[in-house]
Image 1 (cartoon, rainbow, N blue to C red):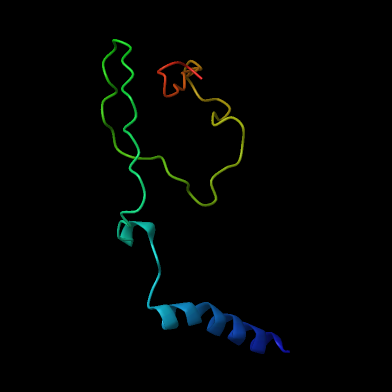
Image 2: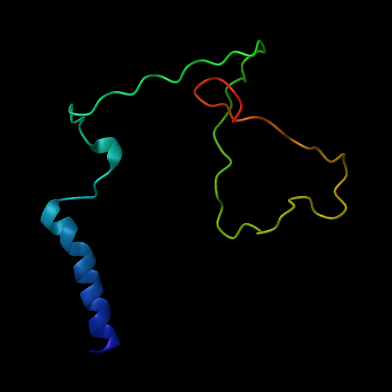
Length: 95
């Protein structure tokens, strides 16, 4: 089989499900089945502090972004900042 023939076969094979079925299936487009049980809402954990204000989504992955362990470039002014936090389980206790 030639390279050209292989590429044609790959294109036809990848397009066949779309032509036969009609489109791309996405979870958000699926109708609820009604057969599954609904999950209980996550219990609210209150530590007495104000809630975090809503902000814009992101950051998102960007192609060709640098792969490094530190995002600080040499010579960047400022004070290093350490961010820490907790992950809480369903019993409102840190995991």
